[in-house]
Image: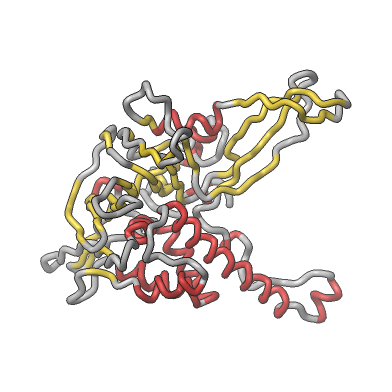
Length: 365
């Protein structure tokens, strides 16, 4: 084998105040399941997904003579959708916009396929056929949150109502705590009950207090954890930042989210950290500045290093700090306290072969 060629990921040019978009693109580029999803949407629909797919591929770094990725085509595609990126934005807002555009593209394509695939036989049978299964069209960021109301008086519950989510958002812990424990935040999803008054109970035939509880009914392949660091002062109405450090968990067991009742942990699946979006104050910027810590797996094959390759152990890669178009090698340790951590992206992988795309296979999705 010839000497390996070292390839580092590329950053993205800042076009105005587009650091929010650059940090999100850097994070999404680390998720193998998301990139596969984008490729599927790009092939199926073209348009915005095709532009996004091109940008994510270029960010791998194997671009001869290129020192950064130019995002002008993507910025134009977002602007056509009514979303400008050359102005201060919240990174989570940009993340939601990208996901919604991809979802809308797939919904439009699915509706068109259903219309085109009807034939005389399917009309006689009363149904149509589609070219792809619905499962392949679901974003890897999509999970299902179960919402249950239980009567305090008679314990009657109407059952679990499902709501989709693309990220889990958490408020900051009480001020007396000097750090943010992600494990405690995640426990709030399944370990907290809220008392709600004035809910009509069909068994009691009157309004009674109810317990409102949540549970994760289905885990996403790509898990996004969002820490709400910005609040608004009740006195002045001005934004107030909370820069307490977050204690980093490089790995999360699905049992921390499902109370051990899910299929994922029984099949040797766990979440591994792939990126951390940081939001800090920045001179001259009213909205602060976004950067990203990203993970890049290295796979040596025929003298080249591929940044994203399935089946490679998590410990064989490198962490980088990406500040728009500036990329420097960094490091991130289990339990490390990271100031200004704003969004954390995890990927579900298999303990047995370290491969991605393992969660949906494990739960039969």
